[in-house]
Length: 477
Ligand SMILES: Cc1cc2nc3c(=O)[nH]c(=O)nc-3n(C[C@H](O)[C@H](O)[C@H](O)COP(=O)(O)OP(=O)(O)OC[C@H]3O[C@@H](n4cnc5c(N)ncnc54)[C@H](O)[C@@H]3O)c2cc1C
Image 1 (tube, rainbow, N blue to C red):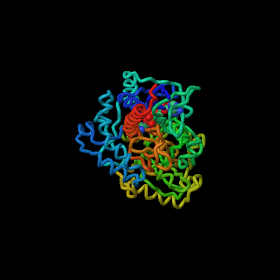
Image 2: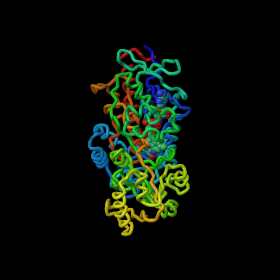
Image 3: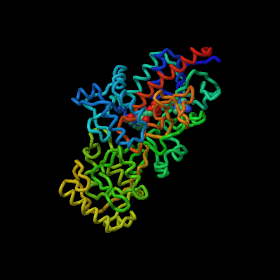
Image 4: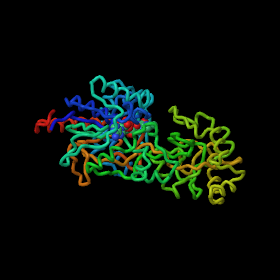
């Protein structure tokens, strides 16, 4: 049977472009099929942070780090519930893949290197130019290598013969291939997929939104395509989930430090500025998966304007949701509650007034002492809840940063069925995978890093498979 291409890549984001580059380098005839009007996907929209160990950027800052240390950290944080053999590859190659991106022209300024999660050595490498700083060098490389690309072409189904994936179907056309690589990204924009695969997020109903919002095809097509070929779907109910004040579609990677966060028992349950490695699930484990941010008039008038609190990490991240004007508009609409006394506020929020008063007393004493006797965090507590009116804003972990359920793969990026056996001819990489996320997020950059590492590997392996099949079988067109 003739083939149109050796390797067809479904989805031209970060993982897909990396796969295409490597497959082409291996001598394969490659086609990227992309549903959107342009290449880049969520990768181009992202913050462009790349998680890696043992890099020249770390060394420039004097940090000694290793793949072993990164592996121990990621696996322990996720209680060994992410796939160890896949993470061994990710950790071993994260450094070399960052250097590869630098060779292609990406810039990761050493001064911007930060801790992306709760690691002890900074491993989050922000790219100059954020996500497009990475996507653009890949797009340029794809173009320079003459890799064919079909834009505005959404793959509708895989061609399957005798249990083997032999191509794709899109826009009424069959395209035959030696191997197919699924790199369609996550499913954050699909309410149906969220309900099915990410119920911890979906429970928040209309408040739920995904940061993938501007990328229209991040709807889980790779899961649907893979399932039809017999692929197993793993990683149920995992992903990066961020607390949100519920104000529009604003990314709020952390809460500002000038408020007090309590659960429905009126108890503080985590440091307000805890790392987003853990905050989403810590919040969702509280009664009814809800919390209240409590603050007073003085904090609203002063702290909400202070750049130290709007952008506490100096990362250029603003929190417009927590500025005074925004909050006052929300008060007028009844979205943020206000009361003259704490007792009244407790009643409006459905909290026990005695419990809230007790928690506030302890919190205020901490503010007076400029120390957190509850969680012993470094950031000082400087804004007591003391001078009315008092405010309460409901916080829920309802923003999806990355989706975690998806396809299972082996070390060669072959898609596996429920028996753990490869589906012949089918490969996958990137956010479409279900083996990368536990209920903790190792840190900023832990999505683009694996997408690049495994995208490259999927390209190498798919090209090898397509080549070996064309060597064995008279199917080269
Ligand atoms: C605002 C934002 C900030 C982020 N910041 C970071 C960060 O700093 N660091 C980090 O590690 N992660 C970050 N992430 C997450 C990260 O960007 C993604 O997890 C990662 O880029 C996914 O790469 P991918 O190649 O798997 O998918 P994508 O880059 O999303 O590419 C998937 C592509 O597949 C296409 N596609 C889908 N279905 C089909 C179909 N049926 N046919 C053809 N094409 C299809 C899509 O249109 C898309 O172009 C962020 C995400 C967002 C949205």
